[in-house]
Structures are given as structure tokens and as C-alpha cells.
Amino acid sequence: MGLSALTGEGLERLRDLLMEHFSRWMAPVKLFLPPAQMRWLSRIYEAGQVTSRRDTPQGIYLEARLPATLTRQLDGVLKRPNT
Image (cartoon, rainbow, N blue to C red; front, side, top):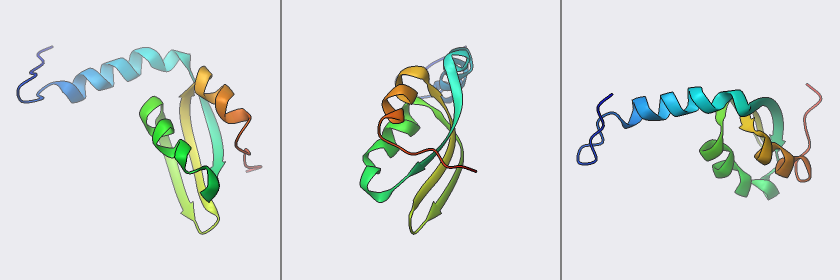
């Protein structure tokens, strides 16, 4: 696999390969993110794979694959939707 620091060529492929490799340490989760907890949104996108997102006036419903460490952090902060 080729990778160029100058043009960025190959970065997407590298990201995909890394996500595939580390996905075995990621668990699927469903979360509801209320407006007061939006600070977590960028962290979720950076550390995991968001597979579904639904924005509502009350907040954001997400389905994602997240590392166990982030899932544990979120357990104390966010409510999981019943559906």
C-alpha cells in the first residue's frame, strides 16, 4: 500500500484498514445524545464508526461501533434508547 504525506494519497485506505483491524475490539451500541451532551459527538465520530444517525429536536439517536473504553465512559453519562 502506498501512502503520501505530501498529497494524502492512500490515507483513506490506511484508515479503512485500521478500522477493519481494530473493529474486533469495538462493540455495537445504540445511544441517545441529548443537547447537553453534544460534546461527546466528535469523540464518538473520532474513536468509532457511526453506522446510523437520526437528528431530532430532542437530540441525536446514534448507532455505532465503539471501543470498550469509550463505551464505559458513555455508560455513566448517556441514556440508551429502548428501541
